[in-house]
Length: 365
Image 1: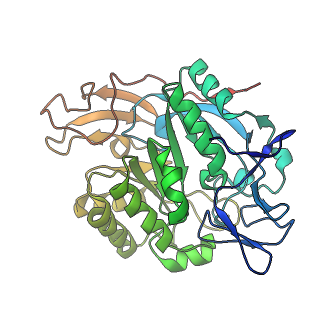
Image 2: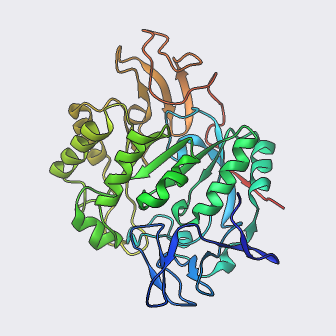
Image 3: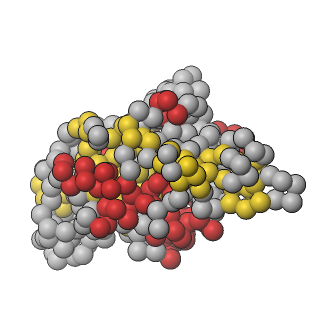
């Protein structure tokens, strides 16, 4: 059932699904590990969830920071309907406080007036079909904080034959994750680093809940999973840390889960840190391959070698990429290598798309 509106005249404020009342009169949000405890009128860390009349509400339902059609590889998802287009949108706020946030103008927004685009779930599905997109992505800011909106939008999309994708930090409670990930076909989970100190100091969060989410999604769901780590010079790019991250990937998630190693650029509250050198990405990618990961990609740099997909059996280039534009393609309609018949992991459905590097702004009325 769609989330119930608090006031029928304002469908953008709905009752939250994960919360409970405390003995001292506050309400506790049970959506993310922060477990914000709020008195009437107070907002949580994410800013979009609040105690209104002793009930937890989501105050950004149906309100978005914009709708764009992107290449699916931009999410990044390299093994999910390659070359196809995806209708992407987000809202405002975030449940992490990353000092290096690359979308800080959206995720750190403190006023709902920034959310100029409005669309209820059915209209999102209509718009995606109208643009020819194969899927809809909840992205730009973390969709965990607008989970009720994402879940309802996913239901509307599935009814129209569309797939749904989340780009998330995976900072979610066990109580909420089954319903949230249960509506998805694919997810890219951002593993910020592999130390508690990094998460505590630079994200105002904790590492363990993210590792728990990654394990759970891989082991307990059919959601196609890819992982991204932004390598920040001097903070999480050391050889030892990359080794431990890759060891976790191989042991806990399996060698077939793709890992994206992306370059940092100075932004938000870390403008004094230099860009990630391409050599760092190359070294980290080689480390990951030596650990036994089959599919390791470099991001935010021009690197055809590091952005292309290779068959782990015969080593042929099976998806050649130049940024988001596909070149040579050696997979059949079901994702089998046409050189050696090896089945690649992922979601493949027919020939590849040809969306390329286009980015199309969409207005939903």
